[in-house]
Length: 605
Image (cartoon, rainbow, N blue to C red):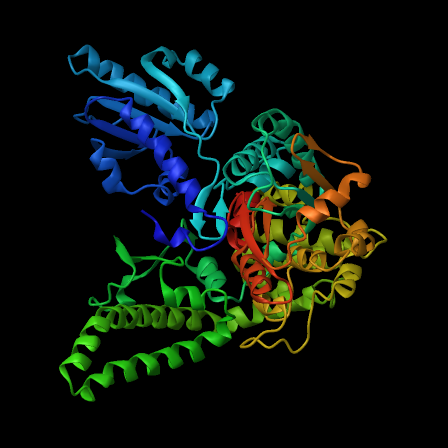
């Protein structure tokens, strides 16, 4: 169903197949025609595990979004609600069910079902009971889909507010869900013998995972699986990389057009009507394009720095032009036959080339604008800790010109992180100006950012400056076209999260990082899992070294981001996996794919 999910030693399609099978079982429990009412946050992700044609085969005739008020009257036998466990959504469901119950009194009969993804919530069930609708459901159950397969090396839980919940609302639900997801992953792929991590919530996740693993994994006498090592990355350890502008092709598309569940929307008037490459359809005046590894050209382009894209597109255009011109040289019937056999692939590639040339033109308009370049120059000053102790003139001008609040506050947060806090008088000045220009209602957003640690008063230590120099987070004269360092993803800045993983790949790498890791918030840990035992003492580690010492095959490492990761970080990991010296394959899993805009939106809105 999704051939692009194959291709690596860890077969990501197993998640798709498991989720699709479970959804099939849910539908088969309901005889007759069906309507599915989706929580908005799930309607997109579910498209990563099944297709609408598959649902139609199971008598699904309607797909409806979950909205407050009455549910539209649909001529079906069964109505199936599939939702996240959220109290606000329970109110919507209650209103929908009341409207169905009223209609049923007048003669129409429907059977109702409710499924929570990924887990049933007692609190939500209580809410439905209080609303008087819980008894209306013939069955209440779970749709156990912990990870959604985004690509052949990428999994996402699609939990968009994890960082906010952990650091502003003090809600640890995401830690529990992450632990359950990692248990499910090991049930599919086998036990992961070695675990490293950094950060307070990363440690909480591992502690919970050990307890749950002893209960759920050891009972199956599970041996070592396809994955050799797990890195748990706490987003709070490196907020700077979440705020920095991504300069990879995929990262820029996400930041300026948005990539959701491998789908992006672009202005349709920029695409010719004959260009149907990768198109799924139109949304009003938008062109919908699928972006994943099923497309050969996109796979080549996505992890490149944007400044390298023009050369690649030009080279590929010349190559396809030469291939199409070969027909003039074909003399024999066999030559013509071979050309005709290759023609469909060549034409598909040509359409793909046209599509990505148009996308590159759209991005070029953004990246060549004075607004973009001035903003990028300002953030790059903060990345190298330049002028972080005083009010920044460019930020002052932005405020005076009433630039978007999100643009301004992002740069102030980056200045705060670069200086390991702002001087009291600088922070007070910024607050005063922001409230005066944008209104007192922005106080809540500022308070949230302070609670999350993105804005704070400077203390004595200069953590970021020390870490930047020790780990060489900024690299001068980075080669953007043929890079030799992960810093190319931001032109000259290497994401801290990935630099830590890179250093840890070296012999005794994790131990050599102890000094610099101690500068960062939260504990660093290294632990091991055996069959039936977790958290082993150092005297048992030799057995794990031998278990993982097969150097002839690449080591497979799962990097799990708690709180979200960016496409630039994913590109950096893919870059590391392509370096022969590392002899490693990465599988990336995250609570959510984020960019500077979506990350801030979750904190300030």
